[in-house]
Every structure is written in C-alpha cells, then in structure tokens.
Image (tube, rainbow, N blue to C red):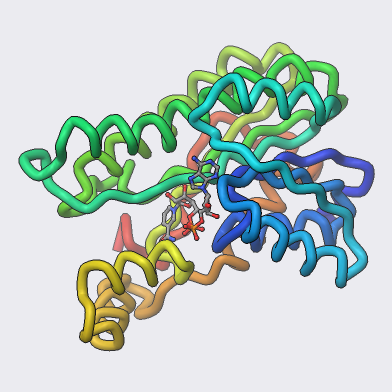
Length: 252
Ligand code: NAD
C-alpha cells in the first residue's frame, strides 16, 4: 500500500518540519527524493536521516522565489513524478502593519515560489506515467487567521492555484491537490513563539495547542501521512481539491 518505489519526487523546504517529515516518509516508501532548500545545512540533516534509514535523497541549494535558479535545478533533475510545493514563510500582522516589503517577501516565497516550481516541473510531469502535484496551503486560506493578513492571502492563492492547475492539466493526467494544516508543531511555530513571546514560551505553546478543538498541535508526520496518500497511485481518483488537516479547526 502507498508505495512510491521507482518515483522521483521533488520536495521544496524539505530541510525542516513538514517538508522534512514528507521527505523522510517518501524516501522510506521507495521514492528518490530531491530536496530543494534555501538552508543547505538543514537539507543535509534530512538527507542524513534518510540515508541512515536506507533511503535515497539529493539536496539542492535554491531559493524557490528565484525562477532562474529553480529552472536550472529542475532541468538538472530531469524526470519528475511528484512535486510537493511545501516551502513557505510566515508573517504576523494585520493589513495596517503589513509593509510593502513584508507583502512582497511573503508573496515572493509562498506564491511566486510555488508558481516557479510548477512552471519548471510541468514539462517533466507531462512525461510521467502518474504525475502528481501537492501544494501546502493552510487553514489560513479557509478562515483568514487573525493577524495573518499577507500569509492568509498567500495561502488563498495556493488554494486557487491548486484548482486552476488541476483543471488545466487534467487532460495531461496530472493530479493536483493541496493540504491545509492547522497549527503543526515545527520550527516554524517555535520560531514564531520565540520571536513574539520571549519568556512565555511554555504558556503560549499551551494556549495555541488548546486553541485547536482537538486540544493539541498536529505532528509533521501526520501531514506526511496524508501527503503520502495524496501522492500515491491509490489516490488516482483524487484531484482538484484541498484537504484540511486541522484537528477540527475549520468546522468544529
Ligand atoms: P519550517 O519553517 O519548519 O520549514 C520550512 C522550510 O522551507 C525551511 O527548511 C526553510 O529553509 C524552507 N524555505 C523557506 N523559504 C525558502 C525559499 N525561499 N526557498 C527554499 N526553501 C525555503 O515550516 P513548516 O512548519 O514545516 O511549514 C511548511 C509549510 O507548511 C509552509 O508552507 C507553511 O506555510 C505550511 N503550514 C505550516 C503550518 C504549521 O503550523 N507549521 C500550518 C499550516 C501551513
């Protein structure tokens, strides 16, 4: 079940958190994993974990917001069956506290970065026998989280990008879906707490955990499990949709 044997998978942001868990699980299930990362040291740690478990992974230093870099690396990689657009950054602020620079930075990484990877991947994906794209959205796209103006907008763009790509490339056999996680305990969340709530880390961690109906944050491995299903041949009928993974956040 859910074997990725013989598949070539690109995972952006595979050096940390959700991207690392997806890289490790996909390699365990037999994929050759290509990690596209801004942070080469973080990518090397993921690759080390994969190698020790007997899997295969290669790292590429790359800023997904730089189209020339992305195209160059995707051309070097060649065959692709799976693209996971996971790299992303956060920004805290309402509209009035979002500067033009903040807005541009978030959109360059979260939106243009995903577009760049899709643009570079589509020619190779068209040649795959079972091509699939998975984009990492967020519940911010579905409910517009408080104080996350630019971030919520960027994830809304990922949601729409997923539907548009699924529709346009259905005839080429390419499936495209997104996952919308609620809070998942990764360095992304730890960094946010450390930056904004120094000295109250434990209390804020507890508060954020309890703010999710299920009473805790998600685990990166739980996102990876859904990602594996969506990218596997068993999900051959699944395309053009977003899958909240949210401990009840959106509906309860
Ligand atoms: P993380 O910060 O732990 O990992 C993100 C990785 O992306 C890092 O290794 C970072 O170096 C890399 N990256 C950042 N900018 C990049 C760039 N320009 N080019 C290449 N790589 C880059 O984050 P995470 O929590 O694992 O989040 C992964 C994705 O999931 C993000 O898109 C995030 O928006 C989304 N998400 C996270 C949560 C959460 O609570 N953690 C919730 C919903 C959605």
